[in-house]
Length: 368
Image 1: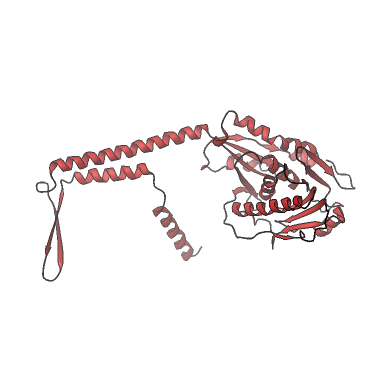
Image 2: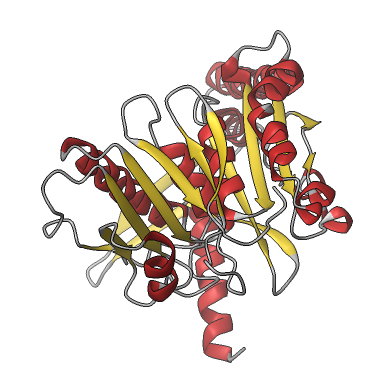
């Protein structure tokens, strides 16, 4: 790191320290102590005298000719009262925060499937800044996914809301946060997002495959958005449409053609989709809004089923699932991509208004 960068970091830290939010109690305590200390000096007098050349200030301390004793006593007790009030306010806030932290709960939903993160579990990676009791809601489907028992893995994911409610117990929703992250097949992640739609505020974390740690989506929004294509060319009366979303990789156009034949395709694509480029929560929210608008528009055009081909990160797959409104939008089937199979999209999770179904499309034998 260059000296220029270090200097910028130090200046940034200094500015943040200067403009940091100060607790009112600390301000009252500091002001009260300063006021009481001033009274103990015995008083200050300030004399001003002038001369022909310039104006001079002369000041001196005095215990005999300074401020009146009565006024000094008033200042002293005012300072002490202000300091005590500041201490009382800080204690009150501390007790309130302590009680809130005892009531609060953080339900940590880790979806463990394609990658073994047991050495760096999401439960142990929750930032200390999130106060509340950590409640483990681990969903481990590694053996099921590896064996191809996708239906059993789906059953575990569909049961996530019930698991969260059991862990929450009698706590009000306002005292609970849900932290979620995982590395699973894309259809299972999308399904998990649909299941978490009604769980209030959800804080997503993603697994960084390079550093092998859990990371929050705290990077700035670069302003890049999906480009929509194919919507205007959609034939009238289309009841089934493929929606290809390219966020982390480009979707496989030839595989889509091989799997879906003449079904019309609508695309949502970033200009340069790359893995590891979706670490902004604000950007993911904006992309989810575009996705929602596209699916709603297809519904308005009379489309009844959307076949979703999704090339996205784990957190964006979850976010798009949470954005999908299964009650008011067309049913959606999210497909798994397997490059070596023919067709390359062998199975999907079909999500309707009230049910979830596993659908096989491959002509080859795929254990589901």
